[in-house]
Image (cartoon, rainbow, N blue to C red; front, side):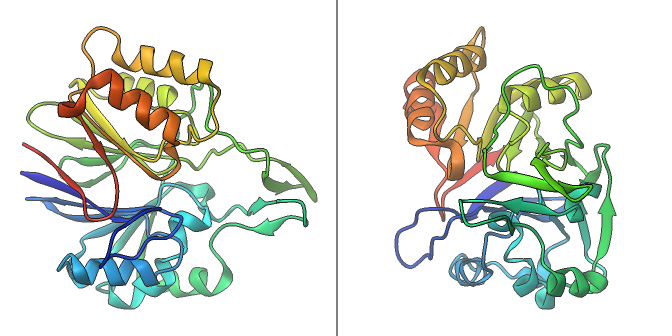
Length: 276
């Protein structure tokens, strides 16, 4: 049995702490993997404690992309990790990511103290898919993007001294293998949910039976949401949809209506799904 538990997310009920961000724990017979670390570390450790999960037992950490709401808890987490714990991510994790909300560009990625502290972990940076523990993979870089991406106008990168729109090249997701098929777990899915699903179907043979996490469809137009839902539910629809974080209320409600209550769960702190 494989269990996915939401540890950090934008909403929660006591005793859990919420914050804008995401962290999900994957527990399988092959090992325990933490996917993203939330934005502060405070909520991460608090919620792990209430979930009775020990960060010292983690076998690996994966960062979906560089943004603060997914990497900000890493510095707080590091002292609890066994020395040499592998950290998986894209090579552009440290490339310099900014956010500008009208007051000038500000870093929205890993800051210097965290980067310096990474000496105690083993970095596994690759554009290619990587197997973290048996049956759990990174997608690697999503290079083909014919469908809309999960973009924000305020995200930039510094290139040759100029701020340019962020390409989100570092955005990756997780593929969890089960006896029934594959489950796609997304951080923000800036590469685009449909693009990421197409990438997974191209690189893995088993069918995708479900997806979850953050899908960055917050603020998407009704037409884009309609097209996305229709594409995802065409023919055989997903057996499990588990959405939260940046997915947006409109997309969450649309998917819930399309797949039915028996196939949908809200990805809020403390919720879990199990894969056989």
